[in-house]
Length: 86
Length: 176
Image 1 (cartoon, rainbow over the protein chains, first blue to last red):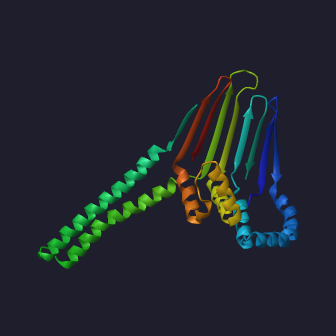
Image 2: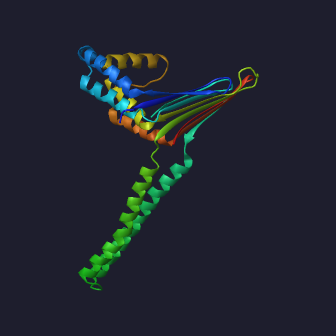
Image 3: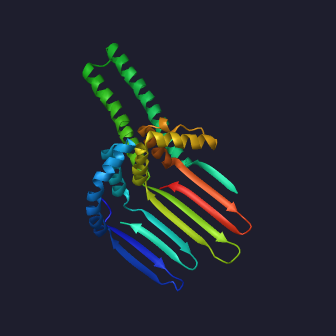
């Protein structure tokens, strides 16, 4: 399943943590019309470069599918940040 | 700077142990089967008894093969983890910790991007790598090689310790 939510946590010097839930569903929905508009150009670019466009779309879809559970944390004395895709 | 690169020895030993055990088990099973067939040819046992004995000998072997497959599935890692611990001795910045967890599935999907790289670009990359003294022909890399590469990552552990005058940095890359 493609990820639906990303959680960004930010910690400042006073150790206050701000947690931001980003609904990726909305991002995908916003990007969908753009992707549809860009499809012919992407197809032409793929054909020019000698790349199978269907394979390209499949790989991008697999990458989106596999993004779940990706986690990045950076902790420092004065600040911290974490990013988690659910 | 100390750099060590090796496989997860415990897991490798277990895998080798399992493989060795199953090979040994198969040899024993063949020996038993040969003895049963000999007894049958000498008329000591009937064909029915021989069949029953052979099936009794084969069952534990099949069970152990199943458990081997199950344990291999169980130990298949799900994530690639990169941890960086930096301790600043100067006292200005303080320690910094970076922790990245990448799903193996994402690695597999990312590796598939390599199939999409046009041949001309691969040749350019080849040239650049040859100039740097890395004799790798990227055009010869097949999808199955890349799959195998990702599979082998499960046995990889990289530890880098750097002790500088100002800072100590420890990097760990492993699969879990």
